[in-house]
Image 1 (cartoon, rainbow over the protein chains, first blue to last red):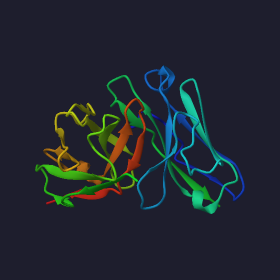
Image 2 (tube, one colour):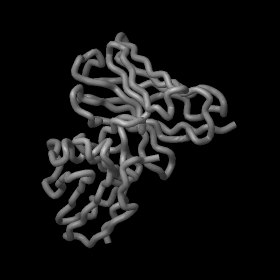
Image 3 (cartoon, rainbow over the protein chains, first blue to last red):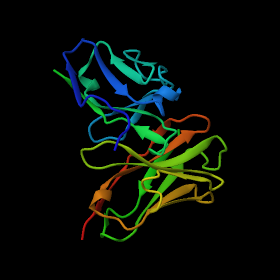
Length: 112
Length: 120
């Protein structure tokens, strides 16, 4: 049972901007712990997309950006491309008994 | 470039113990800079952290699985392993191993994953 809530799906046409929210609580995001985002292309393992709320690993296009405020975080994809169609997961740390390292429920991004 | 590879049986009977190994290549598992972890994903569902281990043998487990999980490390083989006891169909999942950088709480990189089905 995930403690970070994401919308099940978002969609957009090529070139558009989409955002994915990740809502937590005072024991995880709201406690100041960083949020990380992973991209999971169909049939593959998750890949780190954004770390430390808003940082991109080398090789990740600047179309992807992250932000955090209060008990929530967001991932934005600008200039949506067909290859961005994937599942996206947020992840943080939880100081309660929920499981230390917690993931979001996941969001399927569909490119129309 | 660091790579991780999971291995182990793809089919386990109910009530038995699931055993998987993660082999690390392109880097040393004995580095003081990293933790090593297991994460699983039931078919069509989200990700769940199982537990992590440091090269010294220190372990951290998900409270919901702690009573059934054992993670160990073999530095001589550059491997770490997962054992999950008393499995049921609910433990059917793709199991991933991943690295966590000491001082951070993110996982990178991940292995390709291995599907374990619990069925008689």
